[in-house]
Length: 254
View 1 (tube, rainbow, N blue to C red):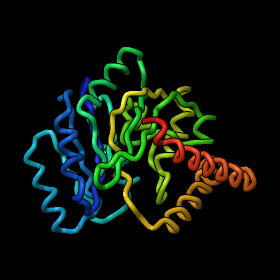
View 2 (view 1 turned 90 degrees about the vertical axis):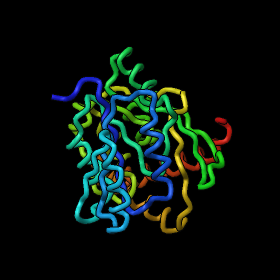
View 3 (view 1 turned 180 degrees about the horizontal axis):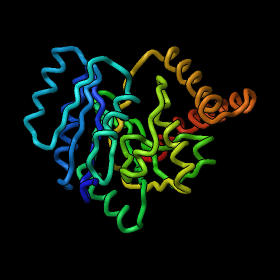
């Protein structure tokens, strides 16, 4: 049996302490206190594991140490499997929550009898400079096919629904596959305009990143959605154009 009104917060971790302290503090200092924090240490180096294990002193934190690095999808699946809460929320280890994130979303879910909610988020760089804002909206399967507009670190959902789906092993867009699958179970994925999360955009190798994203987008449509080759390529092009359009309009949302 799930513990009533308990929110399980799932945080994958792998060797990066750059912003982790800000992340964990933003969870611990939530106005809503009935939470358990599940940190999945995805095979980090021994010195980082020692640092991480210091957080075990907090009774609300459960650290699961995996023997080897198996990727963020597996880490989230392990977290979901071990979650005891009635609700499950996700946050990546370099993102931050606004203080009322859980309280605000939980009140909406209960009031409107929702199984899922996502929120708007600010995009910041490594120095916390505001780059743009993504506004959440109500989405269905058709909406998601053309544009993935759900920020994982803004999501909270009913544990029963969450445990019906697994994150697939794919180097990027694992959350996109999850939302597409979820949208076949729930007719509407509700989004609300309040800013609940700071998403940190970090620099990487642009060419390799774009190529990886392109290939994985094709996998999403061809392998997981079972589209034919033509429609898979068309869907990748549509998704890419949507991404470019969104990037151009991020600052207009401020």
